[in-house]
Length: 465
Image 1: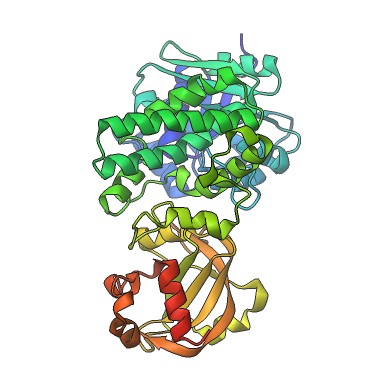
Image 2: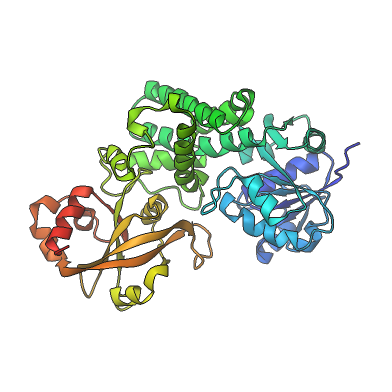
């Protein structure tokens, strides 16, 4: 008999609901915790979660908004998005009466710290036993009882084996491992790679290109994993190759669906968070680090020893006038009505800068996600002014927008860098033939836009800097 008779799932989204169903099928006593009290009450009364339509919750699953009650379970599954995992575990840690296994069920790398999920758990709840669950699994399939196999890794093999026994059933087969890092790398990297494959499919490059890109993506994932200490058998297993194949081949994958929309020039799917958006900048840095450790896998175009601004030029040959499309753009334009937030107010914030909140357009949101610390952005006064008045600098990369209750949008922190000696008006930009394709001209209502290097140089010259 397993030592883990009770399970609490933290996060009542589609994946959390599916995992609660898995634990109930395995014979465990299950609590599904929802952050929103109304959401918890609705699920409890209807036994149906609108985020996972068509799936009826077993009557024995307790749906609650009481975190203290959930914290008394023998094992905890954290099914929040990767960027919210630290906050969830921080709150949970206040109610933990004993060391318990905390299993991360999200695939990603934390913004700012660049830490993997089990590292975040170890910091937020020092006495917990961190573990990671990952592998080829869609919430609909898992909740519907379709055959699914995943990997569950913990540092201690006996613990990993016990956790697997607690969740396993005839239709859900977890395999245990002690290669935590390998499992985490596979889950995080495949999300980014799936966006790239989705873009290729969206641009109708053909099945051959999709297969080639998926194959080379696996080679990239393998090199990264090995350089960071992952085991080969993990990378070729369920949490590596298996998850990559699933994610790069089905529109059910949120990351593939995002790439598909970007490739078609469409809005990303509404209301669906793609973890790969947030992971891409972290994975790029991990990749550079890995290549420094393994000079034999360098290939000139991506050589991390080349200056950052030089490497970014490689990506600008991809024409993306509307959106960075996941590429490493270096220059941007942000728009603000001076009556709401002006350049002078931005200057008053000094070197610390200010959070650029309130973006509610999905294309603009993607551009915020693509920004990197140190990037420059033109500060544009819209409506009353209609002119570029200064240059700002990105001082903190994308993180959840605290003013957004839907948890769909992000913000960045920016600081004022320097004013233009002569503001550059929209009229002047439209009059310059070399700026005819500038996003500001073609997509005037987009609040956050990419700017090419050539456009940046010309506007700076017009502004006297």
